[in-house]
Image 1 (spheres, rainbow, N blue to C red):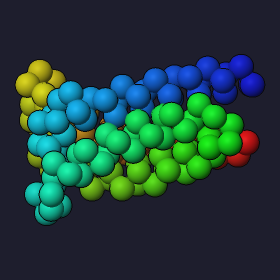
Image 2 (image 1 turned 90 degrees about the vertical axis):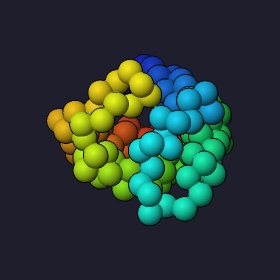
Image 3 (image 1 turned 180 degrees about the vertical axis):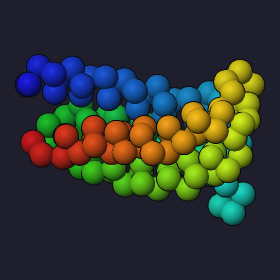
Length: 126
């Protein structure tokens, strides 16, 4: 189980490094899915990318891993309104190349988000 947890940690670090960097590489994709009732969408996108990168780096160190995992959990909870909005807006084209169907939007909301939260929770205890 320990080897699986280490592999999962490396995958999680890479996942959040790539996801965080993507907020800066392709901000339009993220701005499109942030609900209109949120103010300062560009700033929110930058903050989300920054915290994904920060938490990925924090996951690398034993002393900050648990804090990073709790940060990811809170971030995933904060992203729920975005996934609800995706369900409402589906189908739509994301990033000019990926079609988000209603089924995909629902899977992201009710399966992917809880799995990401559980995955991070696995690292809340040192």
